Structure formats: C-alpha cells, structure tokens
Image 1 (cartoon, rainbow, N blue to C red):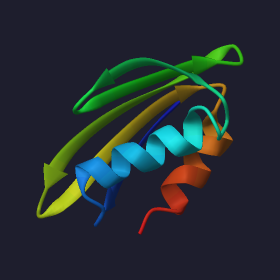
Image 2: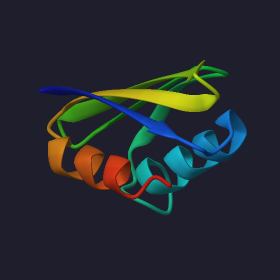
Image 3: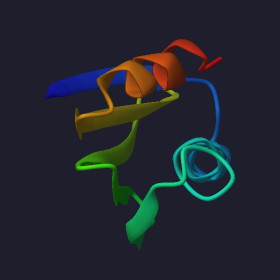
Length: 81
C-alpha cells in the first residue's frame, strides 16, 4: 500500500478525465466505484485506487492511495505535466 501526492498544471476536470481513462474502462479496466467532484475510487484485481483532488498554490493537487496497483499509480503520477 502506498500514499502518493503529486501536483499538476492540469485543471481538475482534465485530471479527472485522465484518471478515468488510465484506471477505468479502456485503461487498466478497474471499476469506478465512487465518482464525486474531488474524490474517485476504483476497484479491481484484488486492490483499489482512491483519488482525492484539491487545489494548492495555483496547481491541482492529487493524492493517490492504492493497494495492489502501486506500480501503475507511480506511472500515472510520473506522467503528469
């Protein structure tokens, strides 16, 4: 299990779209279990990815908590602009 925080210049809307595309259908295929404006939760493959989104210092902050999807979460965070 890891808890990873990153900042991006993407808007919250663009970040949510990117998260759904990467972790959801068409990406890793995890089931989207919670879809709130600032919180997403995906489940599948014996694990989960929970995402919290906020704004900090003019950037979008994303916090990812995962079990079983550590490598993929790190990959997603590394690809943020």
